[in-house]
Length: 223
Image (cartoon, rainbow, N blue to C red):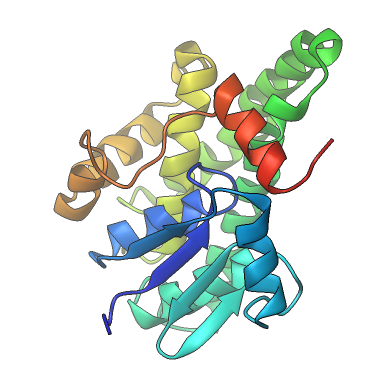
């Protein structure tokens, strides 16, 4: 049996992509078992693999972990991406939660009814440029260091850079007024493990398209 973590999810970004990013940035090879039909999810539920009957689920170190934040925190702790003390971890958590707040809006955008989509995109863009990116830019400016916390790569940097890629997919101009964030994105993207993950053919997933959305809805029985 392989010692690599095994990720159980459908073949798309969803709530697993941030876990893929973090493992990849830590230089950890992982395997993926994709759910392709509703029965695959039923099987995981019925064999007791899913504590709360939901995915993502990651098999790692003899455990079957669920709940995205719990998985991320375990990976970050294991691979030294979670600060050196309680104060640094508190900052890393705070910044990571800010990333989640904006990331959630982008994640759920494909589920938005067509007649509400333009308004939702406008709202996301305003939140991005007026609320979230200025806050992160200010952090980097306040200490003049390469990374958000302790001048050392942490999960907060990785989550934020992942988010910046999604922001760029939405509208590349949104990053224009944030030079320090663009610098962070370049810096993290050039780390060998991340650079490898960003190459075509990696386990990084593409944006959700109509076909992918329909497949996810079918697997999760979303009407």
